[in-house]
Image 1 (cartoon, rainbow, N blue to C red):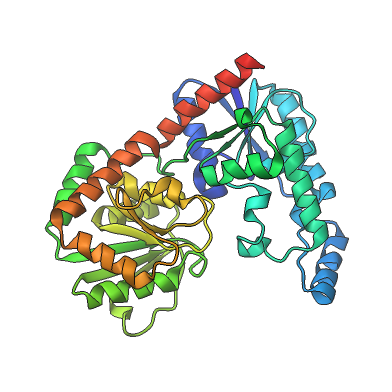
Image 2: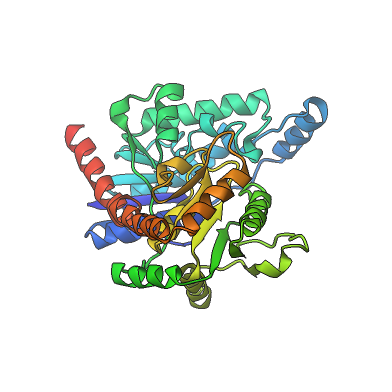
Length: 384
């Protein structure tokens, strides 16, 4: 099958959307499909967008969102039309629904997205307190895209249900397929087993945080978690990857910050792999998270993942199975106490670590994603 995959930016780059399009391309190519990358360029905003942004903020304390405006999106859709018509694929996978809204090409299009517009409004900071015009444009854009697509694929039922409830998408046109770990060469079972055995002998619990947005990803609460587990007698450290955080003096000696590690750089990729191999759990307590592939990456290394029950996180982390979820109305200190109970019970820690890897193998890898996606493409096309 000739499959085009289109994204804003190069879909074959691991820098585009956290490497999700690249991982999908890699696995589809392994399955023998001819995969054609379509890189869409971000057009220049019309001059009046800046003016409208200032007016809305100054007069109404609202935000104007230029990226959902029809005039701006039409320029991207025109690029998509031209490149699809040139490539002549059997199907097009559109990364994010936005670019499909005003496209006119005729071959089947499948949306791959981690949220709907309705789900993200007033959830992520950059989509909060939008003006009425931006809300109208955003919902119109998303409705048009879903009406045009042959099917939409989301990694979590959180978004899938929104497509059905908020945009009246027939359940037969929407599928939930979890994304995987954005790692090209994931560890093998034998190696993961050795790491888990080594972790059982460690007197120090090494936590790792990965994220470029410290506050949205719950960094301050992660520090609170670290302090609490240490107060419970757990020797613990924290490695912060992806950002530079301000660390209070009382825990500074236990926190290490290697900075941003780029997976496309061999040295950085090796350093990241070594940190994951030597860690005992990933902790990212995001306040807003559409999905969170980083939790899948932790499970790929046999690391339990600790996250907040928000957005699509619970699609990945099954509380008490392959990690822990900060439940609604649960305090960070209570979560830390739950983790300490697991840490002090070697059988429980080993069982959770092994389950983390089996969850990765069974449903949180891009190999599994590609298998299920291929079935969707084949089924939808044959029934159309």
